[in-house]
Length: 486
Ligand code: MLT
Ligand code: ZN
Image (tube, rainbow, N blue to C red; front, side, top):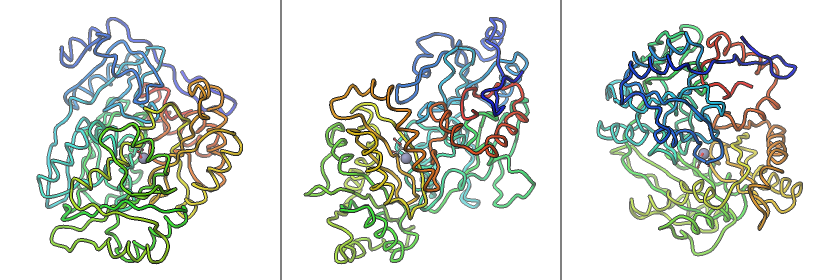
C-alpha cells in the first residue's frame, strides 16, 4: 500500500515490523555467524560515519552467499518487512542507516568478500559485494593490473556500497565514476529473483541497462551481491606534486595546460583551500605543511605512466607554469613516502573537518569551466548572505565536483547553528549550484540527508520516472526505505 507524500503523488510503500517468528526463522537459517540481535553487535551499524543520523533495527543479518541473500529477500518480501543493505557504512549521506522506527532489518554484505576471479586477459575482476576497496587494489596489483577507483574511505568502503552509490573519488578525472568501470552485476531483486549479470562483455545492447540502473540506486531496487569490474594496466611510475596558487582561475588554467602537455597522464587534480590545509595540520597527526608559505588554494596533482613507459615530466611542466605566473610555489614528492604524505593532506581533509566540528556539507558539481566562479564568487555570495559563516570548499576540481561545506561562525555553538541555519544555507548553496547548471549530488548520492533537497529541486519528470521505476521493481517498498526516493 503506497501512501502519498505532498501534492505531487510521489510515495513509498509502508513496510511491516519484523515478527518474532520471522526473526526466529532468520536466526535458524543463518546461524550464529549470520544473525545477531545483540544490541552491542548492532550498535556500530546504526549510526552514520558522521555521527549525525541514528537508526534502530531488531537484527543484523549477515549472509555469506547469494543464495542466502535470496532466501532473506524472499522471506522479507513475504512478510512485507524492509531490509537495509549495508557495506562499510561509510556513506556521507546516511544511505545505509536504518529508519529510526526500527521496522527494517540490517542486511550486511560484509561476509561476502570473495574475489571470485581476476582475468588479466579480459582485464576484469569479479568481486563480491563485501570486498573492501583496498583489498581489491591489492589483489589487482598482485595480478599485475589495477582497479583505478580510489577514495579516502578505501580501507572501509565495500564494492557493493561503491557500486550502489556510483562512487567517485580522486581518480574520476581520468577513469570516470564507478559506472565507467562497471561491466556487470549480480543482484537479488526485491522479487527474490537473482539477476545474474556478471558479464565480462564490453558491449551488451539488450535494452534497458539493469547494471546501470542498480548502480547508483542506493540499495532501493535490490541488493548488489557481486560486480564485474574493469581493470586497467598497473602503474609503472607516479609523480605527485603539491602546488600553491593564488587564484582559482589559475588552478583551472594549470589543469588544462598540464593536460595539453602530459595528456592522459594527469589522473588527479584535487583542490584544497588554505583553511583546509590549516585544519589538517591542526587535527591530523604526522602531517606537515608541504610549502614554505601559505597560498589561497592548493592543488594536489598526480600523474602516472604505465609500466615500461617514461615517467611524465611533471617537473618541467610545472616549472613552465611557474614561469607563466599560474603557480606560486610547488613541490614534487621525491619518494613514495613523500607522495603518501602529500596524499594524506588531501585524504584526511574530511576527517580533520569532522574533528573540528559540524558543518553544512554539500557535494556539488558544476561544469568544470565554472569551478573557479563557484569557488570564489560562490563562496563570497554565501558568506555575504549568512554573515560570519566560513565556506570550506575542497575536492575534485578536475571533474567539477567540490565538497562545498559551510562552517558555523567562529565561536558559535556549531550544532545549534546547524539546526537553526543549516537548511537555509543548504537551500542557498543548492540554488546557486542549480543556477550554474550543476547538481546537488556529485558522488555521495542522496541517501537520507539530501532527500528533502532533492525533492525540492528535482524536476517533476525526474521524480516521476524515479518513482515509477521504484514502484515497478519494489512494489512492496522493502528495499532501503527512507533513502533517495522522496
Ligand atoms: C572526499 O573527497 O574527501 C570525500 O568525498 C569526503 C567528503 O566529502 O568529505
Ligand atoms: Zn569527494
